[in-house]
Image 1 (cartoon, rainbow, N blue to C red):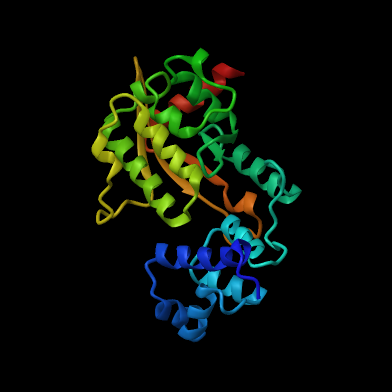
Image 2: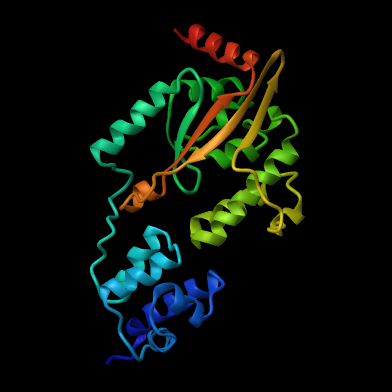
Length: 270
């Protein structure tokens, strides 16, 4: 059996994800219903896994689909986890997203990539962005939600109690990066911490503090004030990387005044 660099890539990935999940070889063996000796041989490169074994171990460790695809390739198999080019979606997924965006009107809903890039938005989200962005001319064509929330040129000046809200967002990114091991999320964190006025101690979040499943976002500009509960949802068992990495961010009004503002903005846009 070859002992070159390519033959050692899967063992290195297996050790990486096991360590990242805080599992011993025995822990992983018990979870995957294999012997700890076999795990040891796989990590040392003395044994080569089957395709089913690769998927079983990665599934037990809740490894993201993109990383599963990379691990299959590293083990010498064709990746059977679909990785479409660009942002193409299957027609049925595309239709489902369009329906969700339409049904959520006049309230904001945006479809995000894993790194926060805004892939799609309904009219409610577009109106909200236009109303609460300080310098519209500075917004790039391909904007990400984290820039909108942390960059002083965009929504940040109008977020009520920004420091508390932003720290919670940064902590969520930290946790997802810890779980997914995705370099794009590391890039997001660097962009967040590079913004002016972001405290340095946010680089070291306290993971012992439980985060609520939703966020509350309050925006105020002049006489216009809105308050939303923000829920982020994902597709369950999506089967392909692009869908696995979608984030659907929905804003639900917390009071009648916010409802009225959203309805008014929709009417003014007609």
